[in-house]
Length: 369
Ligand code: F6R
Image 1: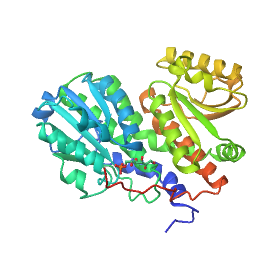
Image 2: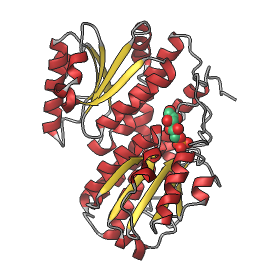
Image 3: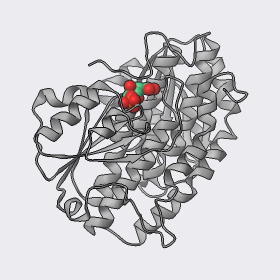
């Protein structure tokens, strides 16, 4: 049942191109528009939405953090992202024009369920993004957009995360389409890029051997830091979460711009720091800033592990290890940038003799608050 792989996690990492393609299937029509009729919230109602609030936990929360960038950029609707476990306790401001999106692989996470119940009590519409047909979260929501990752068995979420991102992009684009905000060449280009992204994920998977080797060489380290900016920041958080849960290492993700406000004090000789570099095309200011962040930490002794787009030569002098990913539009980069981090964590866990599919103290679905 592991299809020749040692662990479900490896199998599920390898299934990502298909999971991504399946989640797009039938949702983009031949003319390049979105057909999300399955989201049974009418166009009239979606046109009224003046605020989006995303609630989720763990890896799904990281998908939500990335979604915020896409939703606000493509729709200009303000979007908040909140940990589901915190949501209802702060008496959030919600109304009938708020669209609440609950993201959950299992559809059974109690924190997320309680958050969505709270939202519905306030009169908001809830859209679930979920991987499990007929589970509680979609049943209690007003509408659901299923991710088609297939069953995810390993406790650490991989393919579900990539499909959550795809679903979030689809919702963002759909909202933009319905509300008529920023609809044009840029959006058609994004839709085209999305439909090609599964092949790019496949290409990343084909180049993972050096990442595995690197991971094995770090098996005796205590700490790994992760840095990113823009959508690379949630990717850094996700890389750190994977490493904590699988390798039981101290791992933290930071927004690279925050370094100088404290975390840079952590940098010491030979400390591995993974840096997710935004595309040098597009938002080039961000790219230049992160290159100077890499210089700063390297000058203080960090061992830099740089994830950068093919053709980005500016990072080369400062990268002790360079992991190449295909060039993608900035907002879609998490779909390719996360994959090496999954492989990295999985290989480190194996090298440290940990149980990859069943990390200690964790359960696949968390049905208590
Ligand atoms: C991390 C992981 C967890 C889940 C979280 C939410 O690899 O798997 O952080 O993402 O418990 O679970 P779902 O998506 O089922 O609500």
